[in-house]
Image (cartoon, rainbow, N blue to C red; front, side, top):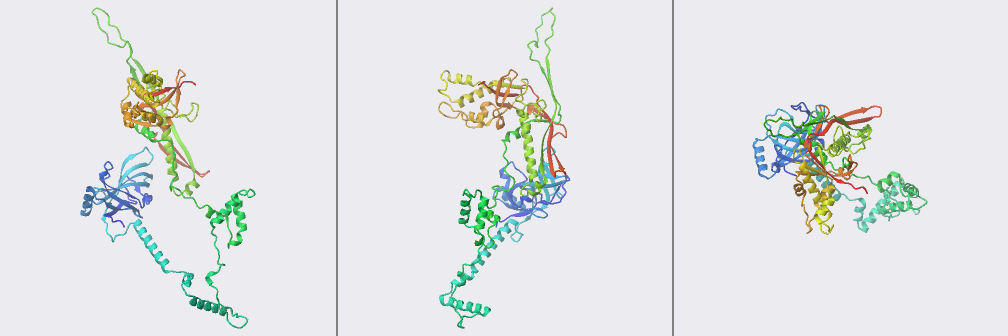
Length: 604
């Protein structure tokens, strides 16, 4: 059994926190038996702040923690503080908090910390991050309860007790099995003379009970071993031969199905068993119950969402949903200072051009429903939370797509997110997005001259063409700087696999490639693969990648328009209906603040 240095309450139920919320019973029930890191004052930035680990035990009053300190300098220091009574309090860091009203009903404990919280009366929650209005947050929760040093005579952790009880039970079982022998085993230990004596005793007992004697008036000596009988009741277990016989029977043309084979076999062999074979017996033996490889919620298969989070996090957020941008173009040739000659009239220079556009918001939503019977019957995971997670991922992905390239639906589709309300960077006006063609043929001719294909591979030529186009296009760029590159995984791999004449790779890593492209980061989006657009001149252009600092793109949403969740019960159809929606606008707010690299598509 592991030795613990101290123990204490990680959380307590039904204590009203300073912000009015209440941690309810079993809010962290699924954390029972888990071991989490023990940290110093919730410092997650430094691995050296981990001072040990804590075993969590869910109880009626809350979650209790059995803590073991490690043999690091800070761990040993913390042990001295706890033993001396200088540190007396625990706190937890939890996320995935779910609440109804003031009641916190669910959460996941990620770590327990020793904290300097001696002056805290009761419990309080220190929120560290809130996502919109969705009642989902991460928090640091303090209880104000004192810890106590852990001794051997204290109550053992539940998991430890279970293990010890299980070990004792197994030991007793083995002892019992060693001590207890069957009657047949005992009988076989007798010699021949002793067995004959037993036969005689049993025979006499049978005769006495039946009152029957042989025809000559004497008693017969019983010579039969009572344990050699073949008429012992048979069970209903299927042997391997039974299974093979059923499968062979099912393959015969006149049988046609496995169910028919089972029925025929059961009828033909019913006399061999006390109760015959039932379909349930056959299914249980031939097809045992399936077991999940990963218990709980099914694994979610999605397209890559990494870049989605980057887009939703880095765009500029504004409490104004109706966006207006205004710029004055003072680049005209006649807008210049003039030299004056004495006696001549001064003339007026040309006028700057005012450029302005407005963007209005649009509601974007995701709606779904679950039958209440399914919600009740699915008990191994929270199906409502699971469904909500899928809906939220879908919404964020479509918002990110609409922001970067458009939502990919046809223009006539009634469900399309309007490009007038959330303006895609790729398809934006030339005033805001620089569209630059990558000339692969020119790069090939420049690198290899007339000996096409004789020296450099296609990957090297392609990579050099991308780098060249990137640097030249930056000459027109007017954005905030610190650009990031969003492209397809295939384009990234082509550039990373570029080799020189000696077969050595040009770029050893994404960091090397980012330095060559003069960007701070490279993000891949599989959703960009194969996207094309048609220009006003009727030309088809294939998207290769987008350079942008997303702080130049503004998402505007007034109060109440942020991502919000709604739930309603349909009493007629016994369904819970769920809706998450947002009302927002989106547009670049600086001219020439993005670069879209494109490859002309030659008509075949």
